Amino acid sequence: MDAELRDEISASCTARIEFYRFLASIFFTELSQEQVETVAASRFPIDDTDIGRGYELIARYMQHRDSGTRQQLAVDYARVFLGAGSYEKLKAPPYESVFTSEVQLLMQEARDDAVKWYRRYGLALPEDNTTPEDHVSFEMQFMALLIERSLECLKAGDEDGFKELACAQRDFFDEHLANWLPRFADAIDQFCKTDFYHGIAALVRGLLQVEPDVIDGLIESVSAEEDVEEAEA
Image 1 (tube, rainbow, N blue to C red):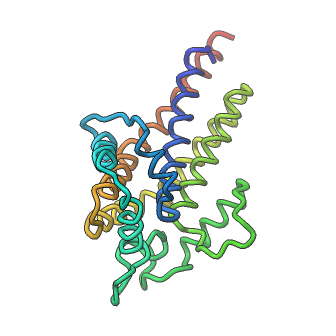
Image 2: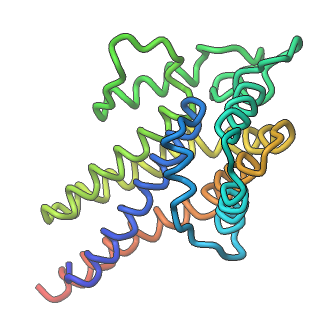
Image 3: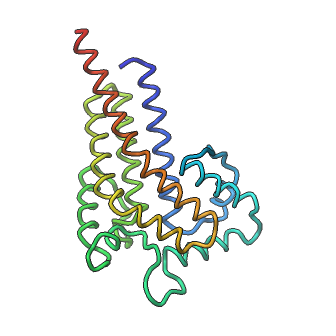
């Protein structure tokens, strides 16, 4: 593989790792004051895509932050993702099983299959973890891990390993993200009160739109490069 193509793929993978880990941190718990300040200081790419619009909402919200911003976000997080103040049901539960099981319960088939994926590729969760493993944060951390492993293969010149891990990314994305995140994003938009979380919902929709093409494009690029090398051999 020539250096230019390798650099392009590496940059794409690095950006995706950062994006998945950003969303994972946002969904796992309410923002700390340090996270609020970090997000406020970030310079996000703003354009006409869902991701760009999501970043714009987040940036605009953070421009007007004050001493009560962290608490406001914590209240919104609790209301939307933890069901605080709701006597009927969770509003936007961050668990795949709730969205994909017939009875809308935790710890169903989606959780079991996610655990199999994690074990196969070595995602280590804390030993004292009590959060269901199909939590959106864990699934996004796992995608970041797969991308990181593929990037390591690329840097080592292992193009077959890169392709295998890229295919794993596509399969996990289809089986464990694309099947419920659209409804999850809709639920966030329906129940959140802050533009910050409206922006996060837009980021999720943008991810769903672009990620399949990005993964397929990476696989095709490496495959085409291999064909060229074989023809020249």
